[in-house]
Image (tube, rainbow, N blue to C red; front, side, top):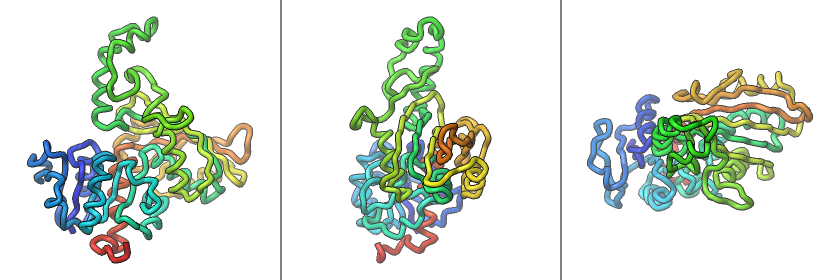
Length: 341
């Protein structure tokens, strides 16, 4: 079995290579792909290949983390050449012929891979889906109010680099009496405003009604993954000065009354979900599981529950779920056989 990793030199791409090795994915050959300027360099003893029509043939699986433009152009080409593609960008998520999969939540969506492409959800949506599915199965999910606290790493290595580069300069200013001057001492290029010692209630591109496209992903992707087309979602996405690890406060409303004890029981029984009383992004960075805590009955509505979710946006939010999907494809006998696609 031959596996291609497209975008192999990026933050998620390097994790994909490491996870394939760590989890023992049964590949006979793993080939890294990247931009032309990276072609020819060595990456873990493997030579990085350029994306060309003469280099993409003969693969069984192609794992993509190279951005939407690259995915839109090259994912169909890999699929046409016989590979099953698992794509980490937003390019294919809402295509009705492309399953949008969280490995623990809706693996049966892999029964219908119309274009030979499987989409990985947004990293924020991903973390919410595990507790949401556990609670939906028990109580019938109807609505969510989601407020995210998203790490700089959600914007990739450049997002983390910008935060790290701002810390000393902003800290040298008067953070107590003249915060505006401290913020103005740096020029953000990745994040909407200065992120060091700050929080920014905006990330992503402009969408309708004052919402960002990052916020609309929480709505649209949640509906598709959970197969609840009328799920009501009120999203607010905030960038925080954390390197890795997204956190989301969720107020979920259900068809049936829900108590904290019963909710905990449902959460504790769900795969790769850990109940932690006070989960924080720093403590869960580098860990495969999603953590959920602060599980509280709502103060006004006995059909509602409040909880706090944390997940490593580079691992479960991106690279790990991509590899888990590839593992599911292999377990189901789909790899190397496109007859049923």
